[in-house]
Length: 418
Image 1: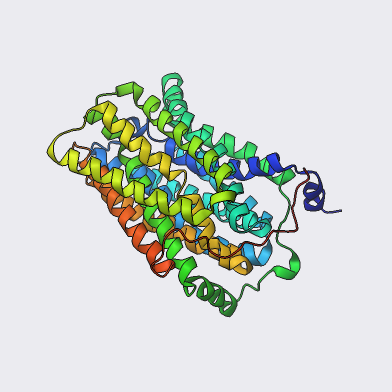
Image 2: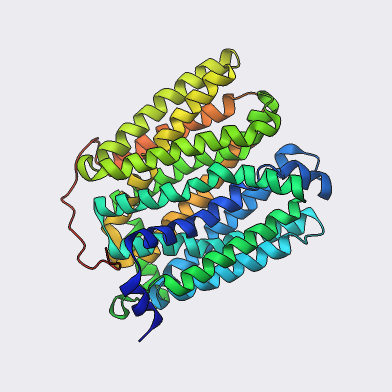
């Protein structure tokens, strides 16, 4: 009996969600744990420009986004497990050698490669869930996985700060490599193959092209994919410049990880809330309402910060409210983009992952690079991408909001036992 068959019969629902969350968490870790050591990296490798140090994050995101275009068709051809395990190896090796990087250029190259390895985890995590679920069920499972995944940003900056206190920034890369090794072993032993042989697509130019065509020509799916990109851009812009906002603008110093962790914890709670209410209210009502509220709150911060710097408490509450809404919007929008494309789930996941990561990283980097010692660029960035998201939703839904959509079919082939 194949290992995947054994795993399929013994993997419980909580463990399955934990595995998906673990794969997603490695990507979050590679971003959030790097925030505290950016000044140390710059000092060691001779990078004095604070905005230039942000490329440590941007390089990872570019590699993460581009490689997804390859991992999608590959996972549709060879199944989910093999491409995923290859990605783990790439991630681990790149993280290990990044700790030994002799200069900033080599570090950026290795970060790009590390992101390419993580791309397999993003593509496969979404594809595996879509293989087994659809509609509101998929949104619920993704929200539960994302809730566990969000526990890492709560502690990741603190972990980075603690490692810096006990060692050096190089040790942070060793930590990433070690954690990825543990999750990779867990995945190898326990994650089943979810793509049946009869559903695999040939890896030919015509088949791959046809798969991409199915994705980009589906109006609702494609524009909801663009919406995910816009929302991610807002989050990426905030994350990239958060250390500068909280430390330079508000003078939090070593307490910056605490503020970051509180925001992430609240976002984790909103993901749990979404998992509880999405079956009753549906993805559209929740996501559309959340986007409208993001626009309203971001507009308040933008106007306020144009005239004066908002007090720390007010800024924190408003930004955290936006991030709370981020726990309600993206997962539902992602499930809406994947819903019509179950037959090419791997390819669809790769296309949307590429758009979200590369497009979102580029747009978010514009926001981060616009940092001018105020909070205006961050708030204006949130408002702008939320407006673009609303436009994308209106195109996807032919001008309508809050619709319940089609009745979602129940999936009849769970891969776990209760």
